[in-house]
Amino acid sequence: MSQPFAIIAEYDTPADIMAAAEKVHAAGYKKWDVHTPFPVHGMDDAMGLKNAQVGWFTFFGGLTGLTAGMLMIYFMNKVDYDIVVGGKPLFSGFYAFPVAYEMTILLGAFGSLGGMFILNRLPRHHNPLLANDRFAAVTDDKFFVVIECDDPAYDEAATRALLEGTDPQHIEMVEDAQ
Image 1 (cartoon, helix red, strand yellow):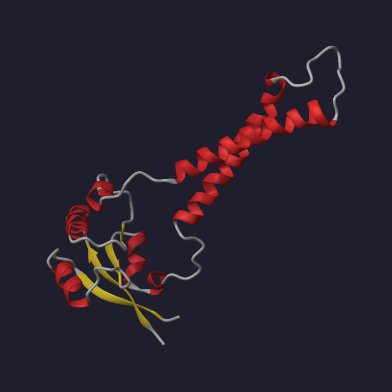
Image 2: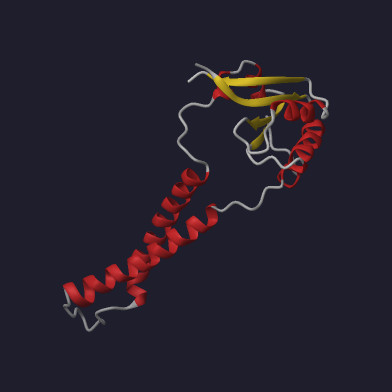
């Protein structure tokens, strides 16, 4: 049984999609996106997007790596296997730095990857847009605004009227066949 997934509007130029994005954002929709064949300068502002939050995941992953690396070397040298070699101190930040640095890079990368998966709600193994024949042109030369049906502000007639007011080339309802 298929159910409505989203309503899509197709545009021919970056200027058209920019104007449409500004109108959709002003209308208060939350679950919508713009798909373009190339980056469009200023689109983030037109959509009202904030800075990405993945950097925080990276920062805390790196901080965890630095702390874990230092604690690991401290434990191994000062507690677990405390043998003085050549008069060196049992723990020194200079000697622990290479391990802590590598742990910072490793856990920072894992934090970035994990943050991307969490914030983008991945993995999503099926997206009904990919089965739409018209939407396939987004990788070539078409621009699309997609408003999901489960958006709190979504009303089929009002949403269709809003998109028609942006002068699209085509408007279509995409259904989820799953």
